[in-house]
Image (cartoon, rainbow, N blue to C red; front, side, top):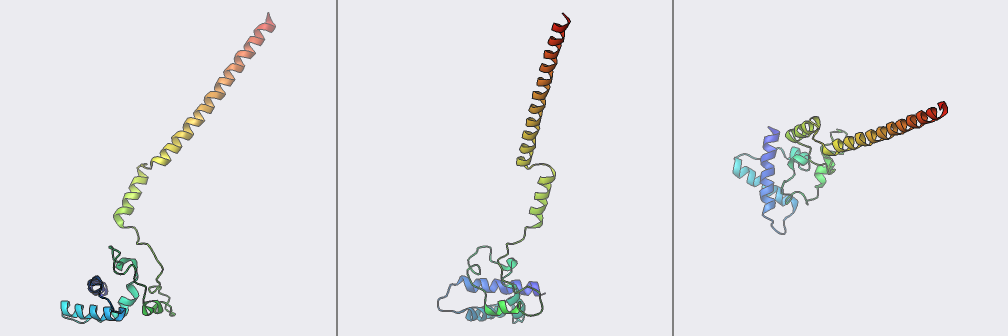
Length: 157
């Protein structure tokens, strides 16, 4: 219920912010958004305290980056998280939006199937270098055996 109503109110605030009216404070924008919410959904928005905690979280950030991205957090939203509740919801640190389920699943699948080309090439290069070292050592051993064989033949004769 809270999620649904807060999402609807965020839509109303986005519409109000999109108007870019000059000379309007944040409080005026919030009151205009409340009026728009009441007009649209025929009920008043009663979850302002929840919206103040959630508005600066990554989920409610505007994907266009136009409305809330440059608006600094209000003193009310920062003061809510400073109490003894320790919820951290009022924390306005810039967290990136978490990776989605599908993207995470794709990343795991790519790693599991070995599609990481850089790792594959590094392993292949290491294998080639080791095989070349082995070949050099085996050639040196063969050359040493031939030399020892020739010395043995000269001593016998």
